[in-house]
Amino acid sequence: MTEARSPQPTVGGFTLWRVFWRSLFLQAAWNPKGMQNLGFAYALYPALAELYPEPERLQEATERHLCCFNTHPYAAAAILGGAIYHEERIARGEEPPEAVNLFKGSLMGPLAALGDGFFWFSLRPAAGAFAALMSLLVGLWGPVVYLAGYNAVHLALRARFFVAGHRLGDEVVSAIAASRLPFFGERLRGLAAASAGAVAGLASLSFPRAHGAWAVLGAWGLFAAAYVLLAKGASPYALAYGAAALALFLGLVF
Figure (cartoon, rainbow, N blue to C red):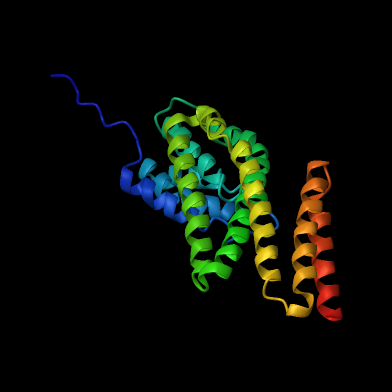
């Protein structure tokens, strides 16, 4: 009789769901020394416990994920899924333990830049400006529009990156590139500018009649000037701070 082989170490579907759920709290234990390392290890722990039932191997696997880790918290889902991919191979003896940290270190910086550019500087301003516009049109439903739209996009991308990381390992880079986040980020910034201009125009209509005509012309003139300056490479932050200062000045004067 041939000896029955033990099943190859893999992580089950329910455990993957637990890891993804825990990843939503990645920054809850942020610290100056390891940054997101505790949150990463906490999220990954159910998978490690399933792969390494022996206490000594489980401790060793957990400790190698306590090194410094820091990237965009949403894009980290791709690294987390990839870490499970590599830990499965380490548990099967197909890779050395160092492979998983080499994978993590190679993606932290690029995904931090990509995530900041799309989520912080594109999606969040677009969702906020569009929700502000909706608040003028539908009242208190505006914040609901913001929460629903923003979270639908960011949670869907987190889940997609996590699944791709676990399925593809190092090849997750190709899946992230196929998402074309820089392209869609540019479109979202255009949506933010258009929504902000519409907010200025609609808000100006509620000004007192004595200033109504001038307010409308001024608001749309500023919108046109901001659009031209952005097209010529002006800093969006300088324009935003300038607009805030102008609004404060006009509020004090009028």
